[in-house]
Length: 432
Image 1 (cartoon, rainbow, N blue to C red):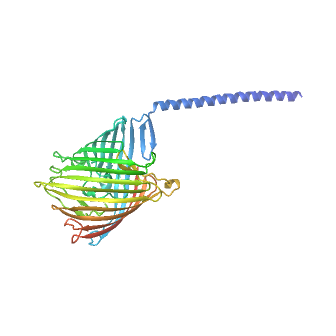
Image 2 (cartoon, rainbow, N blue to C red):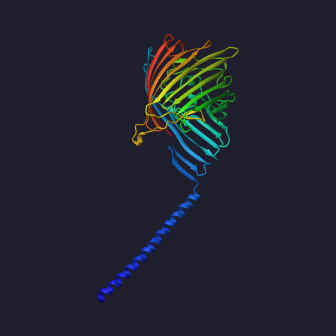
Image 3 (cartoon, one colour):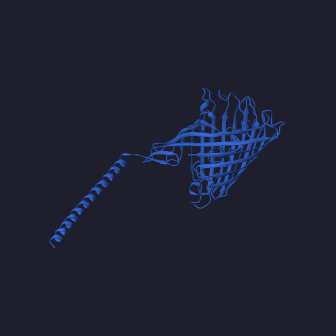
């Protein structure tokens, strides 16, 4: 019995010591957790930056005053063309249609910047390069640098978000492009406007530069529920005046266009160089309707050319109308602040086990480059396409086009003034 009592006392002593050790360990663990928490709080208090993928790498300050984002896009194209007169019999080609890399961000919140260079076709070309003041409590923005003149819904919508592989003929034939300039604009209660005065492009800087004046106005109406942005009406118009009496243009102008696909270098309609050109004036109207997965879009535009010593204006004109439909229920997204279409939000992306988004579309496109001073030809194009959006940032496109050229001149791809051109092209696209 004495031995048993002694063993019980020893067991009680061991239990007491074990409890003391456990209490000491818990205290140590609590102290360690407190130390980690204090260190984390100290780090958060001293670090003013956050990093995220969205999908591009972006660094920003917590107060929103500063940000830096790497942006880019890659379009890989390929296709083939043929025609009745054998101008395009060997036009089977691949092309890096776009290979852009750039940065954008904010400085003290109200100031934004953007710089982007395109490396397609082994050439480095500066695209957007500007600084913009856009205060949240002020309804007007101010932009300085190189950017697009404010003309045409089709041209103002980024090539990442247009329905077909290429824009309508009027945007390229009438040379709606980027220039160095000063722009202002804003939008209030469905009405928006953009105005600008411009010099030349970055690569055309001269002592005696030409200039351009441009402006665009638009109205948009979301006619669905307050939260429903899938029903839209858009109306707009724009104008641009260009002066050619300078060292860059040398009082000359040229209007021309491809048979839709960019991978061919042969122009299907072409006025050739028009000498003694003082200026030209572009005027266009635009319309868009979105009703859920269905959308309709069209534009018409006219360009008057003023020749030296001639009071008459020579006019060239064109337009298009196109429709698209999402078989998977998505809709085209529209930005009221810019009056353009933006990124499609895919409902069931491939990486989540879905089938992505599928869009079909068709377009009728027309351009007339004939007037009393030039004979470039008339061009009618019928375009059809299907686009598979794997997710919000990757899509694959397949387009087919039949182009009819009539009453063409010596600079155009037509034998006997008429030709029929057909082709098919595809694109794999990613942007971030």
